[in-house]
Length: 128
Image (cartoon, rainbow, N blue to C red; front, side, top):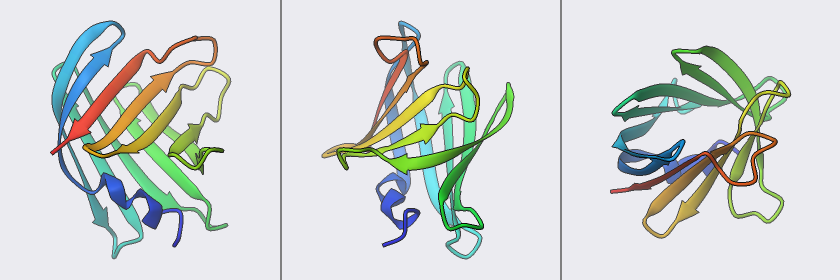
């Protein structure tokens, strides 16, 4: 199974609930295969936030994400977590956030933290 195929748990339409920077957050998300199955497009729409992520294999067949938001476009490597429980983005700058994706029985969870934070600043639970 390729690293991209391992992200299949993200596919589908999702209800999103959680917190962002200490405030409640809710909305929706959708992930689908694109470009003949060579990419997964993930779109998140929350009350005060919107982003789009394109997951694909790079030329070396390593998983990467292109993250589009109002702040710009960012490219990060995506690796399996050491314990095998999920995936994390590898920030390409010292200021980049660490994004973690965890499959759960209900769907999956997203956590976002900066390197100097002791706890995630964003925790989103996605369920059907």
